[in-house]
Length: 233
Ligand code: TIU
Image (tube, rainbow, N blue to C red):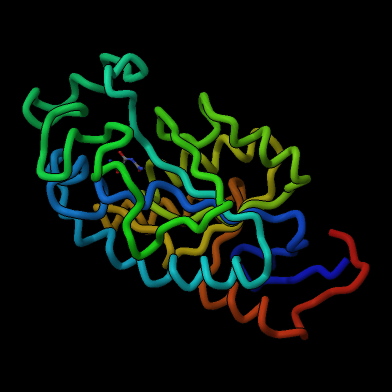
């Protein structure tokens, strides 16, 4: 089966499309639009919106190539029974998880703010993983779905770089997945955390994975010269 090689740092990233998934982390209104969890934490949500166009491009590439596309959402049950008290109490009562805001109850499943932004809406058939924590593997069926599809490589994008993207990446590493992170398709409320977060991924010979850009991924899928037939990693 054809393999692609994508320019990345610290080294090129080889993948087999049929065994690769795109995991879009938490591109939710609660993080990217005013009035949600991100803003309740005191952040400027506009910092995250830079990642929307690259994420759209990435989704387009992945869908065209037939990659397994998975979306995640961070959030909790309406009765908050799956939200640790330690997580709830970090914000003042009127702005914490479960509090009423302009987009409904903050980070609660089924509320408008919990949904994925319209620009990146999942297509029918693309699984949406609802997760109670930062990592997409914790208390979800993500690993089961990946295993059932024979997925060995993940392209991980979304928000925020140093929180849910990093946590998911670390969980994926410990489970043996090869990970590629498109830098421009991730974002943080803190630009310096984004930069350092990306450096941490690729440091020490790619301790958590490789870092590239969304256009490098698109070019590799569109350019037959990046295909390696019958080679192995
Ligand atoms: N999805 C995700 O990253 N959740 C966060 O709470 N991120 C923050 O940066 N706060």
